[in-house]
Length: 189
Image 1: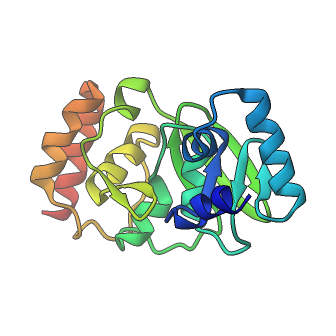
Image 2: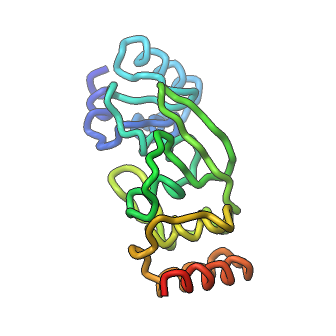
């Protein structure tokens, strides 16, 4: 038991999926893995947050949890835009780009997952790795937002690097989005 728990606590991650635990414990047999997980949940070594998602502590990184619900995914939209100072509204919800659209509440925390085309979702341009989660740069979050909400109101567009926006917009393969981007740029000139 000590070796298995030591491996957990050596990890910098605060959130673990079944796949993470299989890799850490080097367990290939899914039945054995599930019984180990059940054992450690019962012992209080792991805390079950949702089906297939666990924490090793009561205090964990909500952003890491948000991007562990479905993989691949990354923090974007209102969450990343607020971090960048582009919108001023506060949301208790974490907004995530994902393969699926879903609103979830896990352990009292709200998550909104918004569906993005796989060609966009799998493209790493404009996404940075931070701690144990991925987050969109201001430019990527801005483009994600106007891709889904063509007339979104932004409080402050000064943090944007427009040159990066015009390079990144190509990953969306969307002529309307390119026109929208050019229109938003005229608002700040």
